[in-house]
Length: 361
Image (cartoon, rainbow, N blue to C red; front, side, top):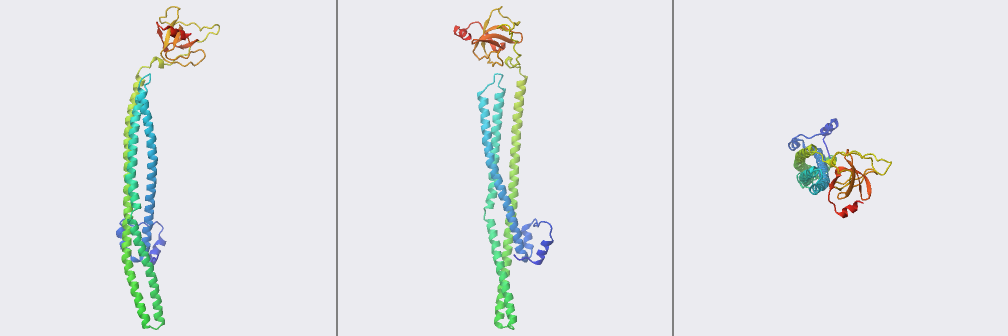
């Protein structure tokens, strides 16, 4: 492309990037026609830079959407698992955990719904409009005009060389009339090319400037839409989490304020085993025990033995209670094995089926 000396001089003396004025469309039309090749080159650079950034945004948003829907799927499964647990399980010490699980399930479902809405908005409000512009015809039309101008410029350059050649022949032939006519014809054609090139250059510059401005306006609009959508999403999620935290803290406070069931209290260790005989060291129990006699107790809470001197009990088992100590432990026999167990885990039974008594021994 041909640039005049002033344009080249200005470029060489410039140490900062060249930035077009804010009113690009009007400024372009005010630049001298001899700068059109350089001007079109600048707008081409802006075109490709804007378009490259638009493609980057499209790829980034589409990747974010794909990953986001996978996160929505995982979060939905987590919500369903919490809902199922809360609906089907009740703790022996209360329903605090079940209620918390249900609250979390509802909140998680709302969050994933908001996340899905955000992803859909990013697709329809950001990715699709940018993709439509990148694939649109307006940029191609502007490029076509620029290419037409470039071809006409090359033709004008060739015609200028032809005029110079005709001028040389006229001088060499001492103003031969035939050569003069050919020179005049060549000069007329050059003037027509310059006139057409001026008109086409204005059209190409105006069209390309308009498209470049449209690129910038649309891109910044879509970026603002993306920021607004994400901001609204995070605000809504924050509201949901604040409400959920309040509900769960309230449940925890109610649970901690309620009396602890006997089965949840810390159980002291069983009395020491007396190795001199097969019985345990005798202990006193202040409760109403029928003299030295034994009695039967039914296991109402399961217990897993922690040592060899303890009994493992299952709900429904029957135990022959021999001794009850003051620290809450009892010594007895179950299923042919003797040992210690928490006395609060059994309830005394006055009448027991004979078959149950047989199971004890």
